[in-house]
Amino acid sequence: MKYEIEFLPVGNGEKSGDAIIVRYEDNGEFKIMVVDGGTKESGEKIVKHINEHYGVNYVDYVVNTHPDQDHASGLSIVMDKMEIGELWIHRPWTHTSEIIHHFHDQRMTEESLSRRLKEKFSSAYALEEIAREKYIPIYEPYQGNQIGQFYVLSPNEEWYLHELIPQFNKTPQQKSILSEALESIASRGRTILESLDIETLNADGETSADNESSVILFNMEGIMLTGDAGVKALENAHDYYPKLSQDLKFIQIPHHGSRRNVAPDILTKILGNKGQSQNKTAFISASKEAKKHPRQSVVNAFIRRGCKVISTEGNTIRHKNGMPSRDGWITAKPLEFKSEFEEEG
Image (tube, rainbow, N blue to C red; front, side, top):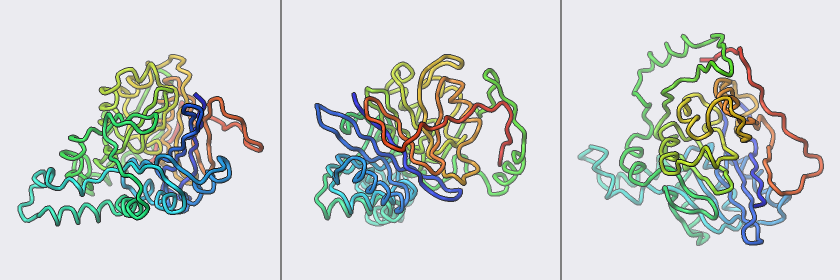
């Protein structure tokens, strides 16, 4: 199948985000899917990119992996300025009767919960409002759903509604500000030594429910997009489709290369064993100025399992199969494995 996957740059400072365009051939026609839109500035870039390089003003599928502003805001620009076939977005405010008892607040009503969720998911709810105004069909991306030629591997509906939504805005272990600060000080400026055999990546990486709720997409060409998914979401994806390590060819490194979103065991499950030549490609969306994105221990972990790792760092990067080259575009330089590096807090 002919396809191209493009990561546009998001953010200018420490903050990173995702703005991804996938174009693929389907029965002789090309389909376009936009997965997250970064900031509003990124949304403008997506519109311009599709107009200039694809020569159309139509997107078949718009997918918001989770409601963080650095993923959802730019999609409002895409939806406002382009013709859209389908919007795929989680809408917990429409499930209040099912999830209200999971909040353990006797004073809460379905109406007040719906209002609270719309406020919490304001960037995502804005997409629903645009879709309604433009009569764009809206669907929810839960495990097993199909979006064009892509399948949703995570989250499943019950886990999302009953466990993740009530835990939004909470840290994984409810750590105090003091304990978080002490951890940061203790890890700041450490020199880390690794090799192809020695790995220092934490075995029990933990992230927020917000990130775990990210939509994970996969198609039979071996393309896997992960948003800000964490270890639990990746485990769910693998449990649903255990052949990932066998079929995977391209993967988005979750959460801009954060070390809290991956762990050695799950990486081995989805990528394959360390030291094997896997011939896989991994892309990272990371701001050029971000000191913590990506983490070198994460880059090393993917390289260790046979991945060629490439980061945006202020540039648009493109992975293609069967598609023509572009005038003026050059081959991106992969990140290097480092056996010694400084670990920031």
